Amino acid sequence: MADDDIHDLDEGFDGTAAGTLSHVPAGRQAMAQLEAYWRGLAGPDGVPYRRDLDATRIEPALPHAFVLERVAAGIARFRTGGQLIQSHLGFDLKGMPVSLLFSAEGRKTFHTWLDRCFDGPALVDLPVATRRFGFRSAASGRFLLLPLRDQQGHVTRAVGGLFLDHSAQLGKVRFDLPDDAPLRCEILRPATGPVYAVAGDRRPKGLAEAQKPYLRLVVSNP
Image 1 (cartoon, rainbow, N blue to C red):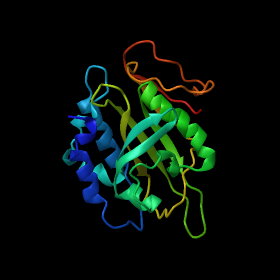
Image 2: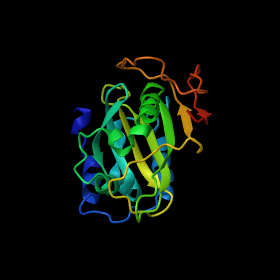
Image 3: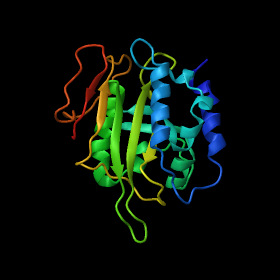
Image 4: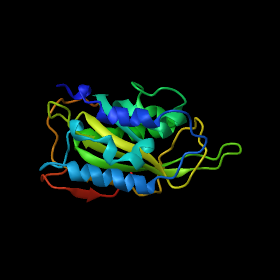
């Protein structure tokens, strides 16, 4: 059975996606739950299979969460997503590039970290923020990416989420990646599978390549 034929998580997301949200809820507790669940699924190399995700185990995180599929270097598309993401974009996100969530200024940096998630593979936890706009106050939070293996064992999927620090009204604003906030990158075992060509050296400054198949925590600002 193909990886894309596993619908348990998709159905869980679809069940939370009805209607719209006028205010995006805070979600740091949900972020911790999603990360802990992902770590619990991890095999010897630290990267779970997409087919093993069970939406019923992460229900509080579903409005914030999504599943991505990598299609090229720096490009990943939504396979499914929760109510928060659906409402933020204002349209059905399936098949849309995840970079739509970010401002033009933030996309280049985001693409670098997106590649790191799949190529490391690595857990990537980025700070995100919106600017004050009209009567809407600025919002901040975290954008989490957790790599997954597809049915063939290649790291081409990721589960993650958008988790805000406080409830906020976002509409269709785009996120920036602040330079002055800490980020996390945990390098796992080297990935096996398709190689996506990347033009130029896009490695974040100060981030060394992992030489051993163990978890390693790197905190850096690219």
